[in-house]
Amino acid sequence: MAELDGRTAVVTGGGSGIGAAIAERLAADGAHVRVMDLDPAAATMVADRIDGEPWVVDLADTSAVAALALDCDILVNNAGIQRVAPLEEFEPEAFHRLIAIMLEAPFLLIRAALPAMYRRGWGRIVNVSSVHGIRASEYKSAYVAAKHGLEGLSKTAALEGAPHGVTSNCVNPGYVRTPLVEKQIADQARIHRIAPEDVVETVLLERAAIKRLVEPDDVASLVGWLVSSHADMVTGASYTMDGGWSIS
Image (cartoon, rainbow, N blue to C red):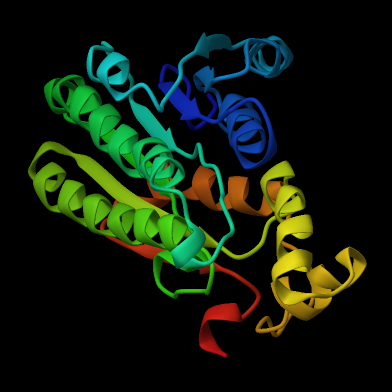
């Protein structure tokens, strides 16, 4: 039997990038995966590829998210957006939307998932945080705030879930080769007044000891381990995967 045979998983932002890689990894390990994404076509494409189930949800609509029924063994909070701008130019509406998707929605999904996990005496929550969950960067106030909040939320879930067989952990990648990172390049070039082709080396990887972007499969491999039986004693942790970015 595969490690996750008989388990069900929900992966937010599962239609592309890190989320798609995680959905594929969990399915390969035997889980039935519900691919949650705002984009119906993307969710369906990934779900069809892994014999999973597409689930179209707008995580920015927190009232709708609060009303969701969620019965799963594994919850991966991965969905995210980005806005790069100085604080004095950061639109309050954009700040609120980012916090809603990346902090309020994970809280609501964890809240919805815990009762069924508690009844079964087993559950795995993995929150895809970031190196920005433990370090700050200029021009990313909402993203940094959301990821720092997610770290605290994850640790609280770890403490409350421990007596019920539920673990909660964060993974903290650096810059990953995804559409989210690619969309930042123009903004970073404008703010730093450099050519777009110079952004990856001189901005994104400036602090990293290993000079390459993280691949989505790298992150998925860590998530796969965290939900496996090999990580039964791992909870409340935050695992960096940043090429040494956070230690420089």
